Length: 117
Length: 115
Image (cartoon, rainbow over all chains, first blue to last red; front, top):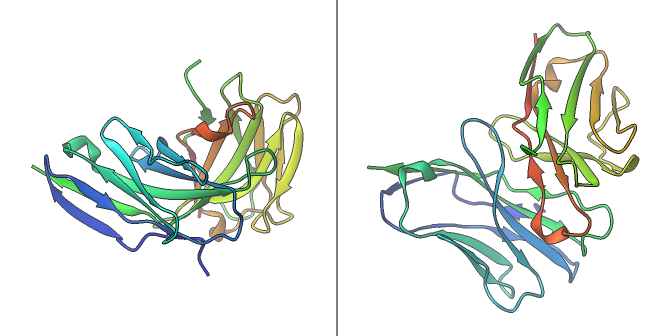
C-alpha cells in the first residue's frame, strides 16, 4: 500500500479562490510528521508547512493551513486567496518516527496546481 | 548562506559513463539526504548522512551508486556505468538534528540525462 496518496493529479483554480489539495497517509508508527512542499518549474522543493502527529492544533503558515484529521489519516493543504505564483507541483510527504534517527521522507506523486487569472 | 547548492544543474552523459554530482548543504546542517525524482513522480529517498556517517541506504541505491560526505560538509553522489533508467532529477536536502520538525531544505537538483 502506498504510504502517501494524493488523488488529484491536476487542478485548475481561479485566482483569489481558496484551494484544497488532498493527502492521505498510511503508517502504523504513532509518531510521525507530515510535510507539504511546493515545486515550481525551476525544480527546487520549497517547504511550506509541517504537522506533527501529536500536535493538537492544525498548522498554519501565512496563506497555508493544514487540515489534519488524524482518525481519517488525512492532511490536506489549504491555500487561501490563491495567486498566480502558486502555480506549481505540490507534494505531501511523511517522516515516520521522531526524527532522531534515519528519517528520509516518503513523498506522494504530487498535484499539479494551475491558477488561472 | 544561500541554501543548498547542487552542481551541475544539468548533465548529459552517454550510457556506460560515470558521473558525479556535488551537494553543498547549509553549513549549520548536520544531516544530508539524496533523493531521486523521475518525471511525474515525487522524490524517492536514496541515502542519508549524519555528519560524515552514511546511516541509511535505500534499496533503490544499487551497487553502481555511491555517496560520500568525507568531512561532514559537502557530499558527492557517483553513478558508475550509467544506464538510461538512471535519467532523473537528483535532489539533495539538508536538515539539522536540533530542528527535526523544520525539515529539509532542498537544492535545485541535478538533472541527469543518459543517452
